[in-house]
Length: 440
Image (cartoon, rainbow, N blue to C red; front, side, top):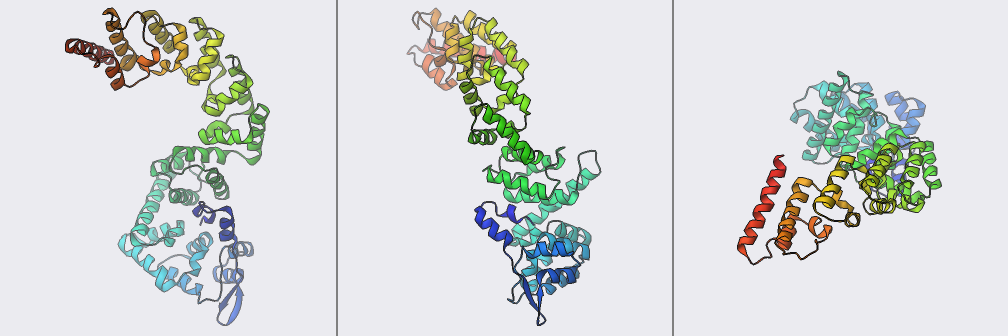
């Protein structure tokens, strides 16, 4: 069904050989028939369709008997329309030994699954590729999956959820499963309003592009990339790549960003340019903005208003333009924190703990730490040690107190003491404050 899709992990050269390998004659009843002639006369295909299919199979005189394949399908209750669909989507079935290869699979599925003839023929004709599976267990699992997808699609067809061509949806979702896309992601694709699994040629082209970019089908980024590529024409993609190039990115940079965050290609030219210029207002140079977005392309979604608000918040707390720029370079996600979070944590660190603004600038990751689970309990222990004169006259660095794990912190500031009573007291402070913060 999807020659290109099923063998995506082969080289492009091998793909082309597989898809376009062709032979033009078939020995039948002592006469030479072209493949296209056979399809026209036996199944009533149009000349155009028959010629297209003849490029995908090799009918050579090696004992091939396609008539026996068609007869076998008819004996199991497949209609002429279903048989035509099967051969159109998976013409290589005509090359199989009907008695020894195909018949056992049809018999197994029909007898073991207990489905009605109509359900059985619907499932097989919708995704005939399942007949290419080997082994009863694999065949059974694949058949059950197709049946479940058909059921879900039928539910969708009676709901207000996005629909589209049912047959295409089932085939496309099945092809994605074949690649390894997790089942939890497949249902989301079925109900997506962007309909990335509705088309046929367009779906195949989009999937091929995503696979060629090296996305892992088992990850969510694969599905995200499929959404994006399906929605964008080649011309639109070229225009967006050109915008990035004008801003100082290389083509390789653009595709690296796409692999990190597929949605980086979704934004309009205006949005990309606007975000770039707004980030420069943070005190960054063109080269620094490029470096920031290459590493964190998700910052393209931050609005101009949020960036402006972030600048205002940090400057209002006493940070200089240079210090703010330094924090953004060291920890870009600072831009995304709310004004309330930034103010609360800065005031705690500077006013209550007496660390300097420069200390915060040196480790801006502190804005991502939890007040209740990390900052307040640990700082309470530090305060107790300072009050007892056990840390000298200077506070330890912000990084040494807050950047480590709880285990490391306790080893560094609590359990190292020889006084068991002191250790117990410090542990009590740490535990009590931690619990109290969580209960608030």
